[in-house]
Length: 379
Ligand SMILES: Nc1ccn([C@@H]2O[C@H](COP(=O)(O)OP(=O)(O)OP(=O)(O)O)[C@@H](O)[C@H]2O)c(=O)n1
Ligand SMILES: C[C@](O)(CO)[C@H](O)COP(=O)(O)O
Image 1 (cartoon, helix red, strand yellow):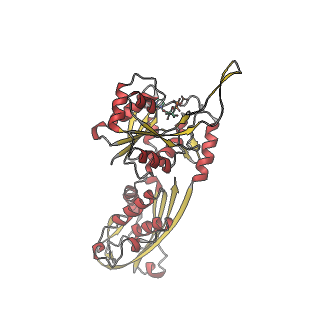
Image 2: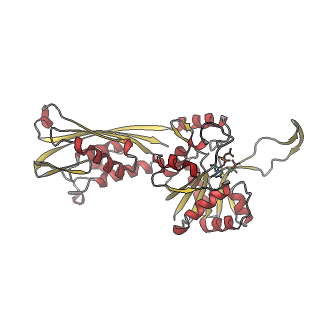
Image 3: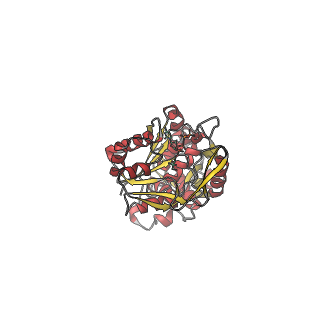
């Protein structure tokens, strides 16, 4: 079952005001768009993300680490046109289902995404909403002119989910002017199930909404720190592999796998932050299938585990401790290789080295040690 998410972000946020469109303004340490993307990136159900942006924002979005791996599409003159652009971008490799979400709802929870996906098992459309709980009036010129029943009235939220082919056809037929995709679906005769929404899933619309969203996101944030330490002794050989880079040397490192001591320390730091033990627990040295294994397997596994548990890797810092070989000339390549395996921006990966002033086992060149720290952030 392929479920895609379309995040519409091509609006100008005029009601929210501010120096930038609301999706590029910062709350709780990152942009509104980054928070929204992260929520969908950490949802296990979602396989593809399309971000629909304004043409003026393309450079800004390309510089956003959270936009890595996301399909970018330029939007249209109104929300519906932007949604259609997102839907058409998926057509060549059509998903089974699609969730359409406002970028301006950054406090969306993984729970709500999962609930909408689950409701699509039995309905061609599903969307979160909250029953209206205040009394409803009509008014004119600052005075109440009447009362209305609130029975059966709901406040609509996003993500609004649909079977892909059905919502694509519904949007293609619609004359325009719909407030949301549920309205488009209803016009095409699709049934839409109501999923209980959340007061926290607010849409940033006016300036006061930023503070409410900031409070919710700052409160939700779970920051985890892990450390890793590893040592491998030298043996005869002609190169060492450090942080995924082969470096010619007059010795090699001994180990059950490829003995990439730096990659092992980083992998253990991630497992540590997740309280998930260490490499030995996930890839027992007693198991012959890991003999000589490429350590990238271990690192990818740890990074995927972090994502599956809803964490983004915020940064990695690794120190290699050896007299030789010199790490400096290879550090940039190591940074790129590690960032690629971790699926994060290279600016979030630090690889450095030190000698131990010829003291101890590293000083006597009996082996290489590595020490790493990983910071994971949720949501
Ligand atoms: N041409 C448009 C207009 C809106 N949207 C998106 O639709 C969502 C809901 O719209 P709204 O909250 O009204 O955002 P803006 O149009 O940006 O705000 P405003 O109406 O205050 O200018 C937002 O995520 C917005 O970026 C879009 O993708 N393309
Ligand atoms: C889609 C929506 O968020 C559902 O509540 C809403 O209709 C968007 O309205 P806007 O006027 O475009 O902000």
